Length: 262
Image (cartoon, rainbow, N blue to C red):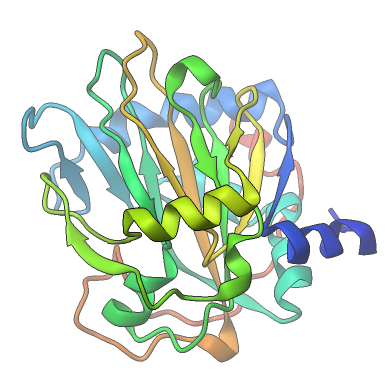
């Protein structure tokens, strides 16, 4: 999939692009079918909710050990737009699934910029990467969707942002209240809602967050973090599932490759 000049300009202006139903129902069914095995893994790549260890908070690295998600990460519909937006070849720095189960099991995320963790924790030189979010489930207002602050990427990595470790031990670079009030007051807040198969492309300094999912339904999103080859991370402290050290440029596969698994 090739982005138009207008779409590239929109990304640079607003900090994100959103495509409803970029994946079809067959592709989403295959990804959903792979979820139980991923969420049931025993390794350190699967982070549990501290209050309820039976609930998965994050599952890292599925594009490495799950064939459906590996193929997803290489589809032209995802990879080609990222290459256009960054204007060079890319590798996957990190992937993670946020399953957000219902009935309050899927806890929220404070307002933050993702780039801070990659810069400070992994030595990512610049915010020259794109976060691609693939909706594994329908993401509605009722399910506490991903919320973004349009145009908030323009100021880069904010000085007022601070490292915060949440109740489950996960570190985020979160905004203080005065800064959020100022930026959200200027640009507003937009919910990213759409059916399963929808895809968002987000700048790495776009401010975003989400609330607890108190609905009865799961709201899973797969996040693929594509980083420019020239922006490869220098840090080596974090494990493979958080800081991938293979900088081999990715190559697209046939656009029907995921459906070939059915």
